[in-house]
Image 1: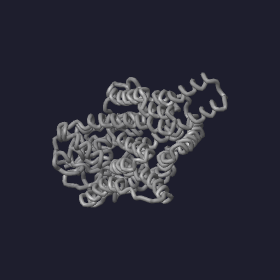
Image 2: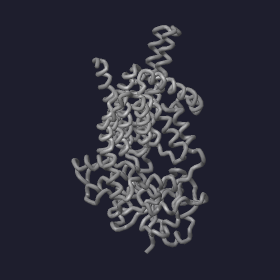
Image 3: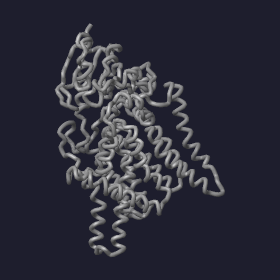
Image 4: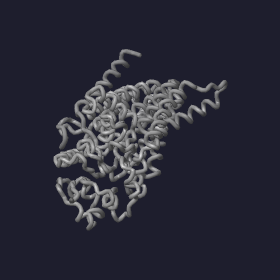
Length: 508
């Protein structure tokens, strides 16, 4: 490895770390669910969200165990989990940048690798969920490590990264399946054939270990959240497809430069560049094919079932998509140079544009002084207005001094973590009893989610915290609810078109 390469690696690590350390934690509501699992584990309650209820509500067991392990070294149940995840994610993203650069070098497209790494260092879809405390950074690092290890024919490392990725998010099965099929095709055409027992063992031991434990402990190895989200949320047909098309058309937030026309242009340009890049990389390193196909398999896997696309669902395919696009761009520049279509100085200028364009355009999504939360530079999409509202609601409920109370809510992260009350998750992620009440009739929905009135009527929680829009057409119109519950506080907000965040208490 040359001195220049080592220098670039150091600079990439420094840039990625600074882009996450400067904003500081801006923790997203879902992250607090993982923190509560980790805190309960350290408190001796076990791997549970509500003490005494063995429910597999988290979709990221590995990240939860990491939080618990690191928390045990830094305060136990009182550990500062938002800070722990912030630092861990910063390191994971820095390593992902290094791997993108190295993959680019491996396939003889070093400039494309450098461009992808620079873009990932400051990409809003990377930084937002890194400082937001989600498992996304670790997950993306493991997927990228799979790609790097596989093209180097390091099957044990590929298998280990795949196993850990699967324990971080279950949709890692898409990447594992692609690489598994690629390996099987090579295996069937290879003579003599030898089974990589070591790699199989490295993969199966952690996977079977966790799923065996989950089956025995929870009664099922699969999280309730998968079913709950499909049943509780109501979307228009093809909503996921439309959102994904917009995302793949503007991977670098180009609409900040040229407006919505960027979507139409991007739908033509970026898939073409990604296909060109994938084909060129495949010729140099055929093993990279599975990793480069992954963004499109991911696209189909989420577009067809039409789930609600949370923001962090859009991040995992981006590193491979970035690199494929930029390899496509560099290969086109090489063709221009080869046929002497541009002078050498023009080629050098276009190369600089290729390397810097994605990062520069992405940086326009940053705000030097956000309009809420910590007044430090951060991506505009790293908004935590709702989390701050829930923190205010949690403080109010905690002041009621009812430690045995049951709190019902649709967004349970901040509320559950800050109040430490028993939670009734009205979506059903951590409360499987809620799932039977969905799907609701479409008349109940003002937006894509509504609280099931019969759930509240039958469960009779002591407190209920909801955005007004979650109950506008259903729960809040019920006479029995108006008689049984009193409005204790209304926190002003128009989030999601809501008329406030409402805190209800059950009447004696």
